[in-house]
View 1 (cartoon, one colour):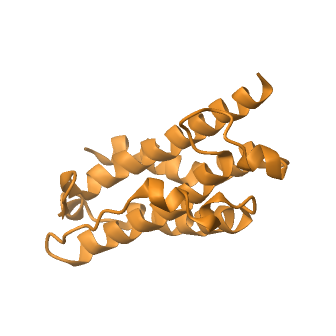
View 2 (cartoon, rainbow, N blue to C red):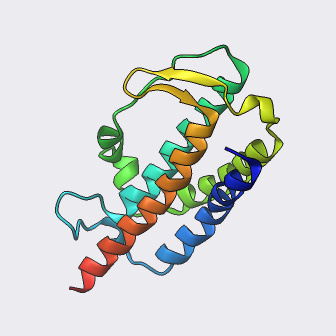
View 3 (cartoon, rainbow, N blue to C red):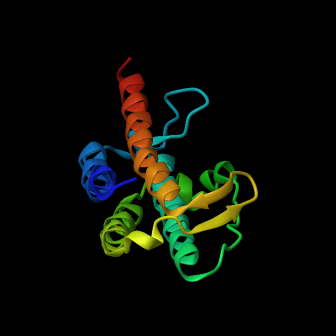
Length: 158
């Protein structure tokens, strides 16, 4: 992958916190915590999950950069999404976390030397993960959860 193909993915990282905040601003507690779509998370669970997941992934990227092929510890995202703090209507702490985290993460991505992009770690469920893999996956991950929130909010009005 070249710098030119990485740039739109890094831009997606930079844009995610603002897009998310715009999407959820003004929602009341019921809109945030009601499961309007069977089998999908609430809006609040999605917001908290993005903060949890992206914090984990940022740490994974830093481990890959600083250690030799580290083992990346998996976690049960569905169990985390059912924890009391992840079901709470107060999403502001997670929005703030994502804003600062993504500022750091964008700086991290932009500062990587070309030789670092192929560094990798081992994930027991996904196999070998390079820094390029993490960039691709988590740029798409944010977009996917924005879409899930939009579907949830659309179902609220149905």
